[in-house]
Image (cartoon, rainbow over all chains, first blue to last red; front, side):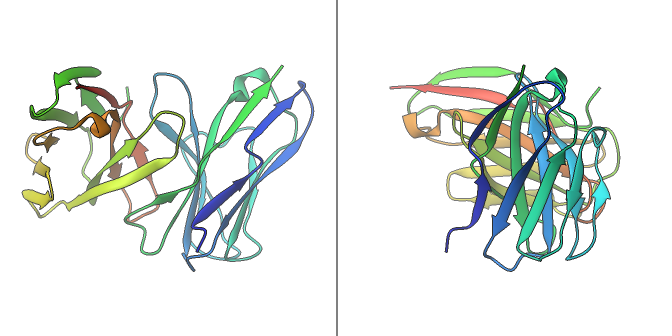
Length: 111
Length: 111
């Protein structure tokens, strides 16, 4: 039982490049979330999903897209990376929408 | 300003002492949760308190919730060096669909 895993752990992008972050969970959770964490701030919700095939915007969705084609996977895409998207990205999942289980994070730098 | 704000921003205590952190929020909530984050890692769920509860215990943790004052406190008793971490409160505004995290309290427990 791996819990929540994130791929990759680190990435450096140039401005304008695109990439996809993968989140996978093996706990059969319905809810999945993508957050970003910037220095001195708490986590801010980017997008979330309440089930396979559904997605919704969170607090800071601009510049990101997501997909949930399979229940266990939640993908976060950056179509044209900007320096303002330099951050640590965390994925989380939840069975009931209460307690969230977090992945180890992806550290992204956009130059 | 953010929905959830922890106070103090940083706290330094000696091993064996108690640590108290506070969280204030602005709007009505479904539940409030506390998480711990060790440096560079994902968040770990500590405790959840629902809007109709006033106090909850889990091991050395005690959480209170005052919905009239829109505030919560987390008490860690008999602290240990291993408790050194950042602590975040998260408010659930919409049944698992809209979490808002505060900026966190950095706790240092000195041996």
